[in-house]
Image (tube, rainbow, N blue to C red; front, side, top):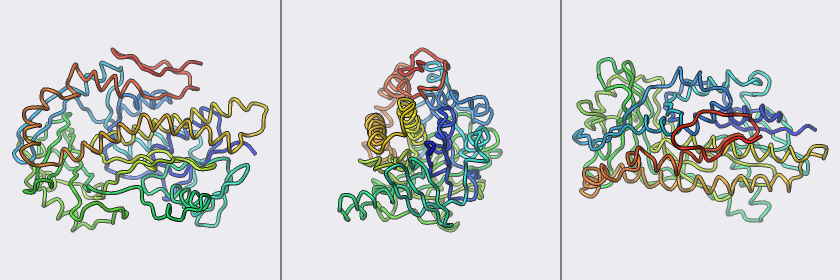
Amino acid sequence: MTFKVIIVGGGPVGLYMAHAFERANIDYVILEQQDTVLNISGQLLFTWPQTVRLFDQIGLLADLEKVALGIHHKKRLFGDNGQVTTTSNFWDAMQDNHGYPFLPLLRSELVKILYNHLKGRESNIRVNSRVTDIRPHATGVHVHLADGSLIQGSVVVGADGVHSRTRQIMDSLVAQHALNPARLANKPMVSTFYGIFGRASNVDLGIEPEIFFESRGGGSSSGEGGAVVQCLATKEIVQFVTLKPLPGGPTAERSPRYSEEEMDAYAASLADVAVCPGVKFGDVWAKVERKSTRMLNQEEGFLDNWFFDRIVLVGDAVHKSTSVNGLGMTCGLHSGAVLANELHSLLSRQREKEEPSTEELEGAFKRYQEDRKTEVKPIWNGGHAMIREVVKKGWVSWFWDRFVLPWCDMETFAKGLLVSVLLIRQGQILRFVPFEGRGGRVPWARKVII
């Protein structure tokens, strides 16, 4: 049997991996449980320069630039009174440093472009395909679907998000193998914060376009119960996301489907929070576009073990943060690139040999896990601390935002040089795809050498 990867999940990470496998001449199929991989999600995804570079390598940059929102400056402000505490041109500095811009993209537009450029979009994607069981064996895997179908392949890549069915099945197999039923009770993803992703008309609001506003600590009289509101506008629309602590405290239960009434009540609690000077969240909510707006819990979690046998996890299935630092998709896509590199390298060494054994595959998965854990865990830790800091209220947070942050902000120090050197320049690349790409003042740590 030809080596075949079964990708569970047709989101950005799953689709990107399909592009990588096409370029590696590795057969694949995507199993998506919804009736389409396309959707109208209003969620705004921040695509960092190192991730724009990944998309450039697979030929998507021109199309992504056409649909991206403009962004040039960042302003932080107090949510209670709208006073701006810091202003920076971080976004423009990063383009000078690396040759690639930040591209704020609607998730729906990104998925559409990934889908439309995929050669196997008609033949290699199965929708309405809900996975019910995965059974590894000595030479491959059997994936059972809810409709009774059986999909056969060599490995399973779980790119099915924070509520990963692949992860649940893998944990069950690990528990059986290790005779440790307690593992099944483990729920690695915990929600402490919840909020709204959405967009509204900016025609009457007049929020200044192409400036990323981050409003901190407004919306509550309690010391720990403030909110963060982030928004980015064009002349016509404003994209926003809100986050505040769950009123009942942390929960490992799956996010409920919040009703319209619950969303309205949540929005009302933030009505007087300034999203930018002169505009409050209540003003934005009055212009909201309901069909693309969602409220949900935002989970956090970082797994110790990312693979078992012929099953391996990627993206939010293993490392999930809140949206506050805008690095969730970037971490997932770069994990996908490393995993694709490992599989390509392993298969290239096989040549005339039989397909790689389970032991050889586990060796590749272990290298992938160790590589990405080293890079992702500090980012995850930073996001975990950041969300807890930006929602705080009290004199310490006020003093920090007002007097300390303007002078020691990593995003403004030396035109963001620390962020460039420690984070962006370390971006991954598909080692097997010829590519020169763009450059800037800060050289890339990884380049293609073929």
